Length: 153
Image (cartoon, rainbow, N blue to C red; front, top):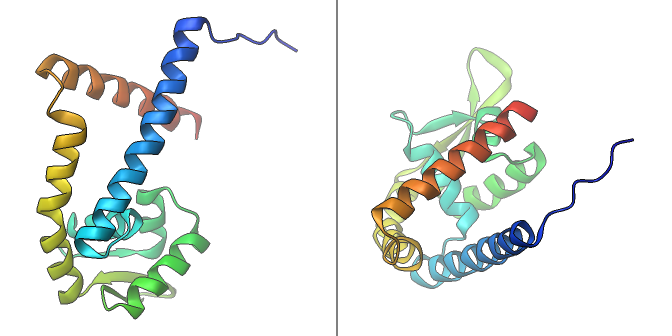
């Protein structure tokens, strides 16, 4: 067994600050979306994933992969969104076991109404106080960590 490489003081400080930031940012974005548009952050993530596709539909398994969600979580969440008229599930013609999650006109209307306020919130909470160099650094760090995560999957 190898010795644990403990975080030094600077690393620990940065790591804990990141965890607090991520938690507080997610909570604030979720509260703002709920107040402004009656959407959860999870609802918004599903709708964005669908609107990112020209056909506004994704196989259930692909949507789960894009969102990094377990299929059971996605299934329950999509069911709730379906009951609200934001998405529908359609059978896949070429695969009897597969299904698509499809954006509805109501889902399109809701995301278009929610997006401007959400972007304003993200800009206000994250980007307004960062320099262009800090934005570039944030992007570089995020891409590097994401690459490591992808390599370990």
